[in-house]
View 1 (cartoon, helix red, strand yellow):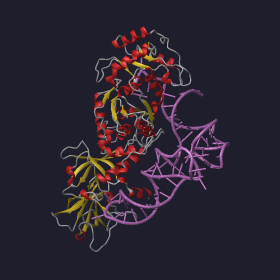
View 2: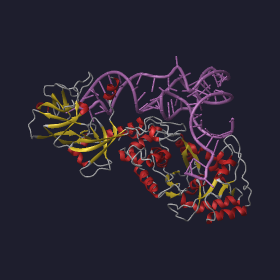
View 3: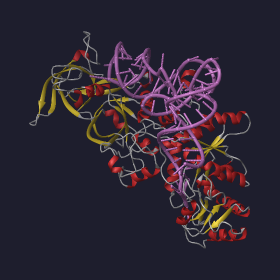
View 4: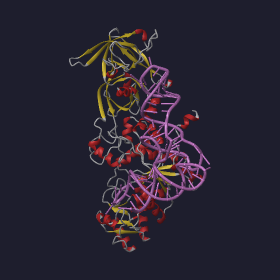
Length: 561
RNA sequence: UGGGGCGUAGCCAAGUGGUAAGGCAACGGGUUUUGAUCCCGUGAUUCGCAGGUUCGAUCCCUGCCGCCCCAGCCA
């Protein structure tokens, strides 16, 4: 492989990578340790993929390692199903955390000890204020908050109350442990943030061992420190939390001093990436589940047929900055096409069949023609495709009264059947309603393989399948879930969803070699797009997902009129 | 009106004192047994705006404008 070929696989640089390199070169950091810290309350999506690629990518590039750590501090929302799916998705994306699988819940005892330490230092207190009262005391964006009446309890009293919280003496919401920082801070996160709350719910991993749980701010940075994370990379909305992150690191006897860095999260046109909206799509039944092929989840993209490599390439191309961004879906689709063009074997499939009878072809006869598996890859070889008197072609490849720029089949016109023969349309058969139901054609036996000995040319090559040999299948075509580039999901989803995001075609005719199709191995249906066997398939019932359509310049010409 | 972050082409994104990389999209043209792929070509007198410093500013200074995030006992 040449250096040029290699170069394309390297992620471009970015400001976080620069920081890491500087820290390593200056010896401020010995070994790079990053982490990907999902909360197991949903499935991973393409936005997480960006973070995964960044964190695992940095670790790999600089010879460090990346931890997979579940931020499982809220048993009210978290489930084992998500813990499992997240691991599967990260692995599928091509990353390996090795021995470094961690859970914030593994640190609960240590975290609890540090909470007592803070109390002992006079830096935390138990508050009796209700959630509503706390909100009132907190002030607003422009007005400072005021101290809770319980802010100055003694260390002894706080310790006793906190221990009772742990012991289960109180009901949910009755007490909360707060940091004692500054109720007048311009940064609302510093206005005595809650550290521990009471939740009487079983935890997926710790069961009923605890009824108080640390919140994100009290768990995250300390977990980083415990694991020796050197660069804690998160998204922009946590920048306001950094002073708090640092405050805990400074005021607790933690074993390391991790640093937090923020980058802007990924946004994609024609879809949503907020966990809330994704959950809503699933719960309200707008999609079939988390892995519906229209979903921007990793599991949805995987089922759709998007290769992990294409997703990684996409993440490398979008860059890492602090600018708000909305990436066009076209870029993701480009990455998929670019990869699949080199990898996907070509096959012929007719999605909207129109019957063609070759009148001068002997009845009952069959012959095999050689079709190339990938014109861009000689090593992909070729395969035999059966040909006979009755065929199916794509309905769109015939027009009875074609416009000037339409090159495909029309009455009296000759076109090439890919890898087969030239045929000429001699007659059009319609039903009572006037719909074309069959074409009568003649073929030129001299053009076997697709070339005319006399050198005559045709302006179009169309795909086909032999009616007798074809296997029928269902094909699901997908369009964006949302009609608008940036859907407004404040209101009801139903109003902004694309009603045509799924089209099911039930009478598709595929060339026989497709009986061996496997899910996870996309093929190109020539002239149409890339398709992948869906897991809903069973023996004798083939169901294909359209991964992405081929670029279609004819559609553009047609649209222009 | 508080705090934080950000403004370079339709969408991303380099460059950060020496005269605007690259990718996607779009649009032309060539090749083609996929109207695919591939190849070639076309974009910013200008870097949110206005001043200032400088021989010279996207880059430094000042002011202004715009967008995003924060008032969960969510993460």
